[in-house]
Length: 306
Image 1 (cartoon, rainbow, N blue to C red):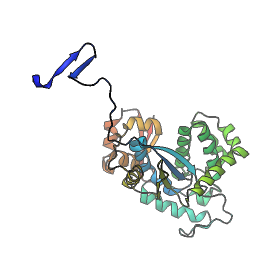
Image 2: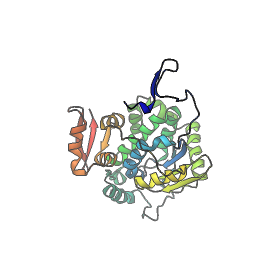
Image 3: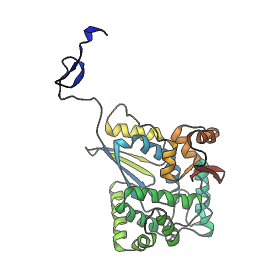
Image 4: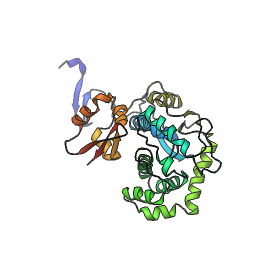
């Protein structure tokens, strides 16, 4: 050992290290510990929000330590009475089917869409009110509920405005589906949803998905539409006013599947930088045989937990 290093083990201070090291001192790390508020404005039947899921999950998984996230319901469809989406040529339920298929094919997040021809969703408010009630109980469970109803309506063609569909999904979260869906017709549930609408209006949001990041100085960035991971990282850097961010390691696939219960191929590709052709090999390497099943829907494979 080089004696010039002045390494000592001091019985009184309990330190093994460089001689003269202070026992206690005030230090400054040149690393931001700021945390911002992130508002995610969405709606249960927003197809572009479904397309954003892979990127948003990775962004939250790797950069969530920098922000507190609040999911807000935007109220996309109160009813078909007077509704029109001129840009996408939508004025009645049957017009939605082709638009949804287009989004699904482009994003590779499976979207069936044929329910708009056979059993159309008449309003996105019923699942939104249920979301708000669950969010009042547990925000984590509310996010799980939002994920389940999106899977139901987009991939599995279920009408999430129907009470029996909502009850079943809430029950899957180990909550009382009948009671919560019954409460969703109450004035309290409607008030909770109206509070979201008021805040969304105050934030100046007019389209979904929209992500707004705001710092302690009330300066922020608004990102509209389903964007790339780098767009959200760049926005976060601007709001935090830092040069670089330190992303967390992506969660193991086993942990992610345990949480989500179902993962589509595109989500695995985006989360782990895996090519589509290599997804099955990646799954076999990461997961124990017998702990999962690989299925297919609408030309896309998906993974479910056994």
